[in-house]
Length: 175
Image (cartoon, rainbow, N blue to C red; front, side, top):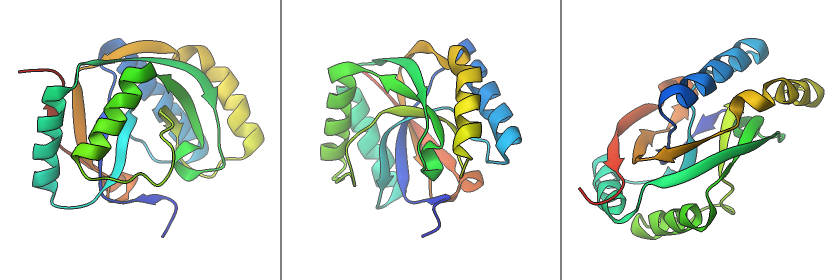
């Protein structure tokens, strides 16, 4: 499969307000600089869910009612030689975030391909390591911050990034 294409449905935690706008501006700038796609800033709680989208959305809504809002802190910029983690900022949420990931996998019958490594991507692509590290140093202070995720964003992440679409929201906490 093409490394620039994703599969299935994902559950995202998204910042809102001024932090979202600041992160979106960074994503836009880096996409223009490196020729990559533009996307919504998010921390993926679970990726690659397979099955009927309506059933996944309903399962996410049931799950959301059992989870509290999640507090996340965006800290250190890092890079990897991976398309979807070319440049990212680590997302720290402690045991509540790790527990939410485990509960989501269990509730939606998902077996993750690898360990959960919460992060908020800033650029997708195959980036020159030196250029990515320089960009990371330039934007480091801009991308740090805290946010409270009040909902799971259920997103169809099938295919190329430009084809991704939000299917709905699952508020966190009892209604």
